[in-house]
Amino acid sequence: MDETKKKFALWAYPTTLEKVERLYRLDNCRSKSEFIEKAVLFYAGYVCAEDCREYFPEAIVSTIQGSLDSFENRMASLLFKYAVELAMTMHVSAANFRVDEDTLSRLRGKCVNEVKRLNGKISFDDAVRYQKGK
Image 1: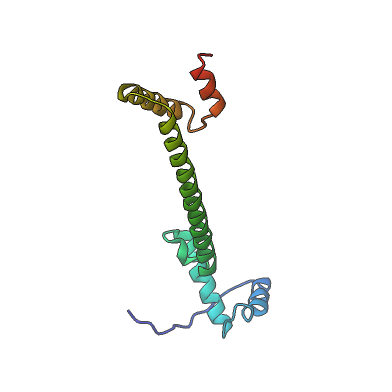
Image 2: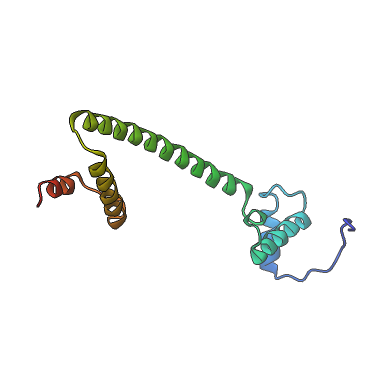
């Protein structure tokens, strides 16, 4: 593939050329041609939309990735703390109540169905009412 630049005529409105003149240095371009080429490549990436990295600045992509990484770490930390508290509760409950294997198995099945039905929004108050037969 020939990578030498080719010269061609470009017809543009005066307001467009004024924007190029005003903005090409702000984008750290060495020339107006470089600015126009970057603009064409950006727009081509937008139109093709094959890879967002073609037209989204790398800074945006890395900022979003950093935010997602931070969110992932925060969620992992919260889930770990929750799992520790849940394990403590389970051990305290197991130490204080004698439950046979069959009852435990039925309770697990009931709890799985309840969590699915409530979409994970379980309530201690509801469990107490259920255990009291209300």
